[in-house]
Length: 135
Image 1 (cartoon, one colour):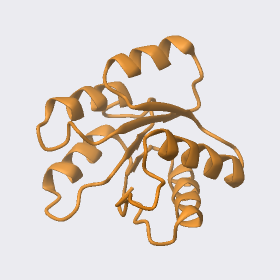
Image 2 (cartoon, one colour):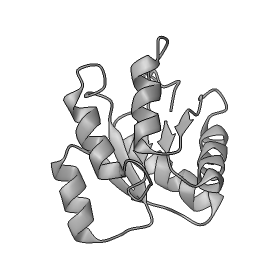
Image 3 (spheres, rainbow, N blue to C red):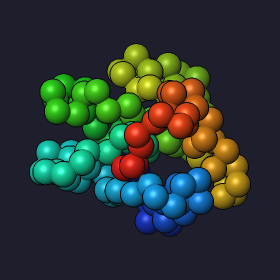
């Protein structure tokens, strides 16, 4: 799942995911509140990963991350902070809150694909035995 208030960033991200593997399903939400509601109401497959922007209206990324980690159903889904920020302090704070990784937004599809692949590899999700289908 990609959680971002910018529709263009969502489209860009989902394009990159589909170029990595066309079988991946790309779920999305435009803010933390919408993401939590969508995830709580999900009766089928939950996402294998959540890529979460920090700066969003209604509920920002840090608040959403805290809420995700409180909920039994959602707490084990790896959350990757996906933002334009590259401040070490924000990176450290989100990792302490339970984020699995921090990915700075890329401005080319190729760079974004590379960043996503690297994160999935670091999290052990790119080998033949991985069972990823929903992002």
